[in-house]
Structures are given as structure tokens and as C-alpha cells.
Length: 423
Ligand code: F6P
Image (cartoon, rainbow, N blue to C red):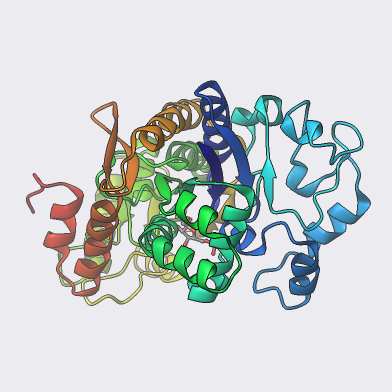
């Protein structure tokens, strides 16, 4: 099997560990392994230098920094993608380890040593992008062509629900794309029959822990840890001044980070997208609660707002407004801290190395065992066991949560998150 892996959508800690695990497990199980740089955009661009250069001007994503680093052809390769004595070297494409240019090359054969130590690196070293071209059928046709040209017949995608949907669309369209490429004379009949089917498996990389049918997504534990540390830091200064802090954390449709950070950091009040405050006035509810805490002697106040939190009418609850309420109604000296992308970047915590390693190995097994009649699988974890679930079922359930929130049916949203949930 010739196996490629890409990372797509927002990055998350642990994505490099996924790449490492897939590459190493793939090689150990007899596969040829490839990485695709810049997510789906790299699949579309492939390895044609002319195409890569031409599209840099009209790039739908900003890749200018990439051309700069490739031009230097120095140790500072794209996103520090380092190559050791892997297969790429044997291709004779590099000068010596660590100095090869990847200009115009988005689908890169890699060996065991190329991913050495990647478990400890933050972000995604092979790059990610939100590709507009891959969303068009023309883009997917080019992507299929580029894969077939390299002989790749299996793809691992690590990303969020949008990226995994893209993977499933690509797989279901694949036979038609192959037919079209043959009809256009771009591939031979022999290649068309050799590549009649594409095997795909999805791994969930998302700091929000927002995918259904899995207990934990890759990157969520690190982000939670990051928030927890930030709250620890804020706690000491808040206590010193007897201040209140409103912390905005990530999570568009999912309050997992906010909720668990609140529990682990001793927050006074938490705003979640799936479960807005139940009373008519959340301002009163929050102030009464914090007033009680102050009455029993608390010197500091921490309120956590998930970025997607709203009231029951879907009006966004903004950290600045919460601050004004605390200042005006309770007379608290209040500050706002938005943690932003510090939650997403940086080294993965131990569990964000363990989880991707176990899931990466399972992904390779799933591909090796896949038959054409199987659905595409997503690798998840449930009750501490690595599992395979039909990818589109998980995506559909994830979407159902967001749809229930948009329809103000918060009980339904919560029941998707936790079937045993009761108001
Ligand atoms: O990965 C999901 C997420 O972390 C969301 O919580 C947040 O809204 C989004 O990414 C921000 O992503 P970007 O800055 O890449 O657009």
C-alpha cells in the first residue's frame, strides 16, 4: 500500500505525533509512506513546479512564507520539515540531510528517520491550510491526478469535522474522478483500474474536543492544560488584588474546554454554547452566585466564557460585557483575558503524544484491512479503548449538535453530548 497523510483545518498539538505514528507504523507494516504539505491544498498542487509557482500569485491561502523558506534552500526548510536518511534522500533529490529544497513539491516521500522526534513538536510540521480549490470538483480532480501520479492509494486525514467531510466526499467521488482522468487521457487504462478505489481514514485533530462518537480529540488535552496553567497564573494576581477576571477560551460550538478548565481551575461561573444560563436574566444569576462566593470569603473571582457562548436567544455573551456587569453591579475591579491561540500552539502534553500514537497505528491497520464496501472510518477513543466508527456518522452527529444549538434546542444539543444528560 502507498499511504499518504495530511493535516487539515486548524492545527492542534499532537498532529505531528499522528504523522510520526502513521509513517512509522506504515513502514513497519510494509507500506510506502508520503506526507502531503499544506493539507488538501498540497494534494491539489502536487509536485508540478510550474503549478506551484504559478499559483503562489493567486494563492487562496497565504503561502508566501513558504516560498521564502524554500528559496533559501537551507536548514530552515518549510515549517522545519527535516529529512534524515529516509527514502527522500535515496531519491537523490536532496543535497545532503537537512538541506533539500521542497520548492514545488507538496507530496513528499518520507522514511522512518524523517519523522524522528516529531511527537514533541507543536503545531503541524507538514503545514495545514483551508483549501478553497479542493472544495471544487476541478480541484479534487487535480488532487486525484497528483495522487495517482505518485501511485498513492490510501490517505490518512487528520483534522476537524470539515476536513473529514472533505475526505469522505473525495473517497465517494473517487471512481468518477478516475474515470474522468482516463477519459481526458491523463492516465492510462491500466492506472485507472489499479486506482479504481481510494482508501481513506480520518483522525480527529481539534483542540475543542467537538467531535461526536469519540471521547477525546487530538490537541484537546494540551489546550486544556494550557488554560489550566493560565488560570493558575491569573488566580495569584487576582487574589492579590481581590480582583475579578473574565477569561475567554476557545470553543465555537463546544464548551468542553470552558467546562473542564472551570472545574480544574476553580472558576465561579462558566458560559457554554450548549447550555446557556436557564434563568431570564443570566446577569442576575451570575451576580448572585459570585456575591455568595464573595460573602463566604473568596478574594478572587474567575468567570470563563467559551468563545461561542450565547444566551437562550442566541445573543453572544461577550467577555467585555460580562466585565461591565461585574464592575457595575458588584463593584468588582475586573479584567478580561483572552487566551486565543496560546491554547492551540506549543508542545503537546504527554497524552497528546500517547493518543495520536495509538490512533495512528490503528489508522494504518484500518487502511490495511479496508474493503471497498466498508464505510470510511474515523479513529476515536471510547471508554479508554481505541475504536473505529463510521466517519460520516460521527460528522453527522457533530453537525446535529450545532444545528440543535442554532435551533435553540439546548436539551437536544446536550443529549447528543451526553445521552444520559437531564436538565
Ligand atoms: O480549532 C477550532 C478553533 O480552535 C476554534 O475554537 C476557534 O474558533 C478557531 O479554531 C479559530 O481558528 P483560526 O484562528 O485558525 O481561524
